Amino acid sequence: MSEQTAAVRFLTNLLGIYSPSGDEQAIAAFLATEMKRMGFEVGIDMIGNVIGVVGKGDPVILLCGHMDTVAGHVPLRVEEGKIFARGAVDAKGPLAAMIMAAAQAVKEPGFKGKLLIASVVEEEATSKGVRHLITQGINADYALFGEPSGVENITMGYKGQIQLKITVKTETGHASTPWIYDNALDKAYELWSQIKSACTYPSLDPQETPFTSITVCLVKMVGGWGNSIIPFEAEIILDVRVPIQFTTTQVYDKMIKIIANYQNANPKVNVTPSVLDTVEPFEANKSSPLVHVLSSSVRKVLNKPATLLRKTGTGDMNILGRAMNLPIVTYGPGDSHLDHTMDEHIEINEYLQAIAVYKETILQLTKLYNSKNGSGVVKF
Image (spheres, helix red, strand yellow):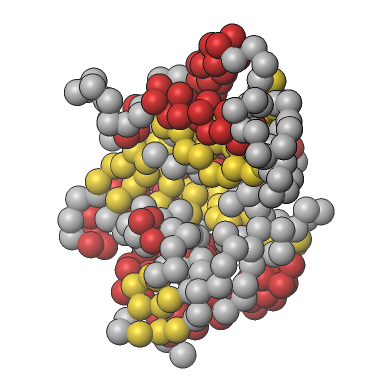
């Protein structure tokens, strides 16, 4: 079986396993078995991350991807050079490409270096997998995260995120007298409208971009107890994205000021905000050796220059990048606009090209590192 055929089969089998966040046991077992067959030393840690190691010596290159997906089946099918399935883009395609590239790279004559594959859990929910890696004192000289950037692009930065819950409570009465009592659902939506108005993109500032703007999305609203009862409690959950020039604390303070102003104007309404989770924004150093090597690999494989991207989403690179002082970027095959959609698919040719780019990057990094006697200092 050719390397390309084996790579496509591996990804197809990976996509055949449904693995929404919190239900990664079956895919973890599959990955552990397949990676052992490829020559990795493999273990599954206490929270379900699959950790594979292949090669010896320096440098240590961390290749990190997530094996969970958002919920919702997309029937697995192969059509016209594309594989359709939940996770094809986000992010089993990149994960499979990294694993195949690592397995191929260590077979090259004279290869010296250790490749650490981390297939983590719950990236789509709590980022529990990468947070646990950090607590275990993981060490590496370089880190590559596998997320869909498009095979020609390198993701340098992500916005941060605040998951904000706001509970609104009012007095209640009979639904036949709505003019007497405040309606908690009405008030919650009224508050949301004020927050949305204060954080709308595009704004009047011509210098503002999607990456440099604060955006807020209403992702959940619940409330009400019955057909004849004026709602006396409502809950909204907001997804707040934090641009690189702010911290999550600064943006949260902005939200609190809006809420406080609303509370002052509506003294009979009780408003309680609470933070469910935060991730700080992050942007990698574009002058790092890793960026130069990855860009060179894209050019070599595709015969075209790489484009450096800044994205409005949030990824595990934010968390590890802030916790560890090392060269780090995100790269992977797939169109990120297909993330979480019912049309999610990856082009087989792009997946195979990404394997070649990852492999070339691994080989160039190890050669450059060791050409400097293991110092890790590479000048361009």
